[in-house]
Amino acid sequence: MKKLLMLPILLGCALAFAAPDSCDPEIHNYSGWMERHNSKLKFIQQYSSEIQIAFFGDSITHFFEDTGKTVWNQYFNGTPYRALNCGYGGDLTQHVLWRMLNGELDGYHAKALVLMIGTNNAGANTVYREPQGDTVLGIKKCVELMQEKQPDAVVILCSISPRGTDKNDGYRKRNDVVNKELEKFCDGKKVIWCDWGPQMLEPDETLPVEMCSTDYLHPTVKGYKIWVKNLLPLFASIIDPKDPSSCLVPSIKTEREWWDAIAAARGDVSDKNVAFLGDSFLEGFYSVAPDARKDLLGDKSELNLTFQGDLLQNVLWRAKNGELNGFAADDLIVCAGNANTNRTPVEVAAGITTLVEAAKDKQKKAKILLTPILPMGREKDSALRKWAEETNELLRGIEKDGVKIVDPASVLLDEAGNLPEKYSADGVSLTKEGYEAWGALLKSNL
Image 1: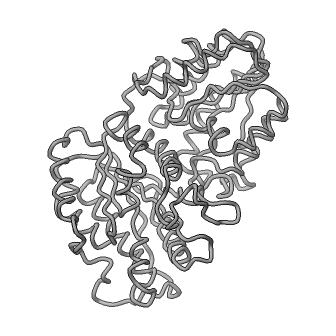
Image 2: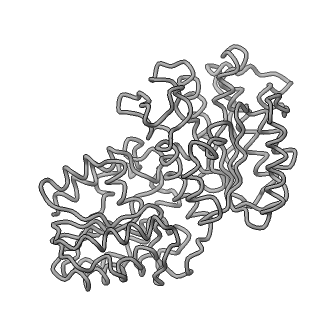
Image 3: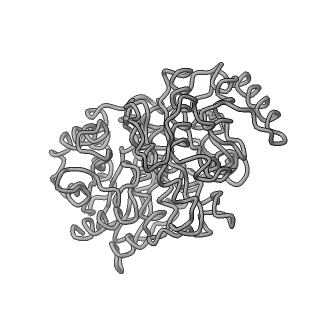
């Protein structure tokens, strides 16, 4: 992990021999706080051998058990992951530190630790009592304690989510300064940056009520879905999936929602101009950027065969088990394998090749537009980018007999080969602008 350099004086972080309050572990005097702590220790004791992920934070994390309950139950209640929720309403960094030192990081071996904390440090203190630099130091100490107590886990450090109605909100401004500093000590390996909050904002940076409750602080279900959507590819790259080890082996999922989507697709047997077959990244044309999809299609009819959270194995199973039957498409847009980052480029390229062959067999008249692995990783020399490029290099020979590779790297990367923030807020998933660029490229190839 990169060591945090001395924070700029503009942060107002006074250098002193004593640690700031943000770094001093402290019990919270909130009613029910200690009872919640004790219940989490019991949860750890009960599921010690199953816990793969632990979330730490304040009420925003806590409310995964309330507002975001359906999202939590879908992903973190044992299938596909068993997660521990150590979010407490009202907590500041010092309260998280106390909990970490008193059992909440003990007795289990997580593969991923998620941390989002700091908005209450601003809310409870004036900038003079706690400068932004002190908040950064408190969060940094939380990360260091995570690494000390769970050395084998990868820490996913999340940006403090946006609060306030617009960019002029005082708390928003303070948290933005903190977020810019936090990203600097994420190395992309043992400490990964997840900047999901900007995806909740409108282009003018206002925070809409459909993303956040009327207090302009706590996410709605839609907000929680965006957070989880950003986390899932990271979890997939860190935690071994329960699917068969080979990307070539088709694999089913157990979620009812998955089967409902399959049934709906099988029931639509009318011929389509365009069909989309793929994973969360391609599904973003429906959830993140529907206008980009509409512009891509024009007056063409479509069929949605995408599904959030699918690994390459799952897409392959769907392709071979009915989803490509009963209709004929003119163009089939395929994109899968982006979440299989724990597999080698050879394995993923072989799996994608098998998927394309299955698609050609089922949709004999369709032109297949294959989007290979997207250019993940902010910088051109990042580990994720190298993995994607090595995989895509192995796919070059697939472009024949009605198959065309449409690589969005040609429109998403800048001249230096870096992935701009306007196209990807976290270096993994795409923003609305990213989908617009990708969609325009696809449209030119239809």
